[in-house]
Length: 204
Length: 287
Image 1 (cartoon, rainbow over the protein chains, first blue to last red):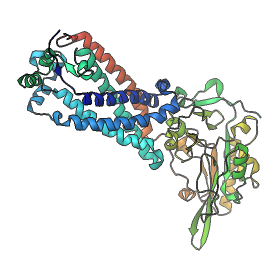
Image 2 (image 1 turned 60 degrees about the vertical axis):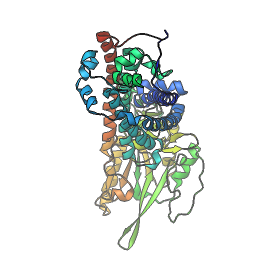
Image 3 (image 1 turned 90 degrees about the vertical axis):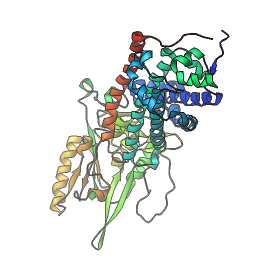
């Protein structure tokens, strides 16, 4: 009560995050329906198989625009430095919540930065192969089947990443999700999870 | 003899990989046999196909060929292709009855993600059910013969259904019925294979030493077979020499489906176990 909150994400950042996140969840659900027949019933949420097939690429286009924008928004903060490499060396302690043994992180820890880069690579795969699957008549069938395999492989990676992302952001680290809702985090949260960033904030 | 149309495989169900058998097997298994050496190029079969299946007529144009249409379409399920091949001073028509071959191992059905959009019957017919089709066109790239065609208006895919409604009533398909030279024959597949052997003997007597039956093993054999006079020149007939129903990518997809479902489940369970092991981290204050 009364503690001044730190501002972590701007309105624009939050909007872009949720455009990408929201579209990705819908794409994942309809995509799993197409990729794995026992989950075909997931197409029901968008009005059936034909509607899902029609909407999936259109939502995918929105996802593509969103993630390209997101890349431009955040890429400056995502390059790994020497301290990030130390952090990665101690990732076991991070996972075990041995807080004292983890080198202090800046605005983003090395895991978040790696997440950003892997997610960006997956996005390139999604968009390139997705365009192919959207307009199959423009390409040969060998290429089409390869695109399908790559698109599904990327889905598996993206799905696993989403599980980790949601778990860490909502369940494992209380107070994190609010940074993506109204953009605010508590000073205690910042000192604990991102000490070097909180230091920068206090200095200012 | 009427056919009960017992089902063998349904797309995007377990039966796509392991065909339904036991109680449902044992009925007649049919095949067309197309003897290219007997085709006189009348295209009566094309007309019969359009008429029986009530398919829309498409405006044709003269593009310098004896062929009626340039390509198959969602409303043209049968096209007699007249490939012009030069043999010295002569020109040869390498005729191909271009329509679904009704593979024993149908690549379209294996590729289809929509349950019930493609059904294979015990009698050999592979039929598309447009009510269940979602228009993804995976079947188009799954087909080694480039047969299914997407309809931009209905957003579904269509192809020859072997006049399944006629076969069900004990009749032969419309193209067979109308062919004036019996270049297209219809019957039990074993009988058709025996007939094909006789035709091969006759063709060889006439000097076609490379005459062959086209019933490719890569798709488990087909339910429309060809007798080709020049069996050593399949590409001139636009017939793939080694078609396959399960290219490497589709086999990869099957593995990925199985591995992927376990991996995603494992991911969720891992997160739960992690939380039970170490709990939340960081200050829990709310401001």
